[in-house]
Image 1 (cartoon, rainbow, N blue to C red):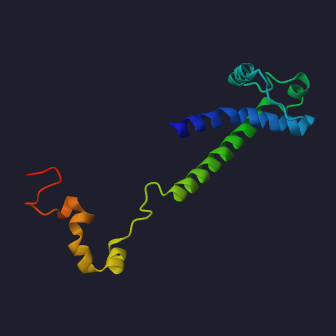
Image 2: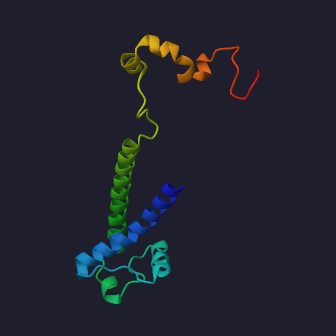
Image 3: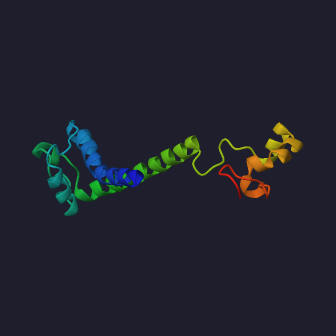
Length: 140
């Protein structure tokens, strides 16, 4: 759920960040719609950039089709970076992998086959439990 919310936040904030960067390159001032986010998103829903910005910063922006192309490029870059970070985090945490587990060959080399066979009921009680033994709770 947290990943979904973070992705939604990044997806929704990218047009405003692109708008701010383009305003910085054209007018020399990084411009975000401070306190006017609803106006800015309303303008974006109608296909217009610059809503919620100061007049000078909004006038310095390129035409809307250019801004939409830049926004799509920004979204693709953001998505690519998110995938790379996600794959890195998956590798780092070992999710869906066997980090820390030995293969059967490695276990046999480390402990020896006789010791593995003697300890099989402890290692894998679901497969090698001896029948007829009492459990911890008392009689059978």
